[in-house]
Image (cartoon, rainbow, N blue to C red):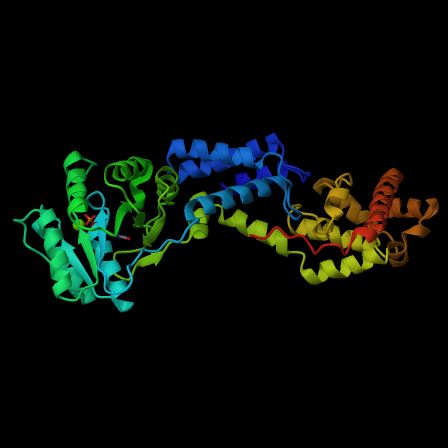
Length: 437
Ligand code: GDP
Ligand code: MG
């Protein structure tokens, strides 16, 4: 995939603004990546449309080519979509009891997650109480008791003969009597979303002052995650989502699907069966995982950093004094080469990028340009003004190119130098623009 993406980037040479063609081209790969990550296809469709609309016409940041710029926008959009607000469980202040209702399909990881949360809250000095509201499988009560014991957290059960609403109500009284300030209700799930499961959750909510309802979803749910999340949100109302089993090799597209469809934040992610494997949710990590473009992200970062500040500063000094010679031209080109032709050293300098867009330096021409410059004497490189026809002929012979190639290079060089002189007045106005994220 990354290879494919890099090809896309090569085809998209640096331009001032993102054209519709630029965006469409890069979006094809984005779409593929999202579908591979099992993001719901409808979500993919609308997400791609939103980002396409936003991206067309945007300025390409200095240091990035159009393809990378599109990915940068995609990345930003995904991050803000998945993490525009605090993703923490809300806990009531003082001695008021906080009640969490944990909901989700069977096997999603509710019971495990209840215990994980209880353990973490206990470490923070809270006094949680786990409540076994799954009365349909006796094994479920036992499982909660075992997990609770491991965490040193009390578990409230009434066996499997009472109904979940009564158990939940009784647990609140029990919590008050026993000084527990957090109540975590572990409920039953079904294999599929069904009416009676929803009714049961509605009844609990109607009878108990639930602080937050948390939907637990298996990250491997894939395309179906949207239906699950939508139904729970519509029928019961949820405040946040916990995505489990992200320690597997799923890319976790469910995170984007759920967020896009319900608008509810992902609170935590389950990263394993062990009780400490509940982690905070990081939108940037999730974005990278879903897109599967870690390499490209690194590439973008590299392009931004490859020319270190010091080098840019030195070059700027030279430009100010109009001392820019062929050696600088060459080292600029080598920078471009080092980064695979992805960026332009000069474009890192404020205001220069757009001025240089007519100076065409493509990858294939680079080798012959390099040869020409290497055939110059140090004096000629530092002081291009001394290049006369006979010197140029000698250089052409040395480089194995035609005289007109040398002339063309000299002309391009003169052009950029002239522009740089014009830049002198402009420079120093702003800092170095950097497309950091
Ligand atoms: P429930 O039916 O929703 O209560 O689901 P359980 O809590 O019983 O979990 C079902 C299975 O998934 C159990 O075997 C858990 O150990 C496992 N599980 C839960 N969360 C995770 C997780 O984050 N990673 C992994 N690998 N397994 C998990
Ligand atoms: Mg369970």
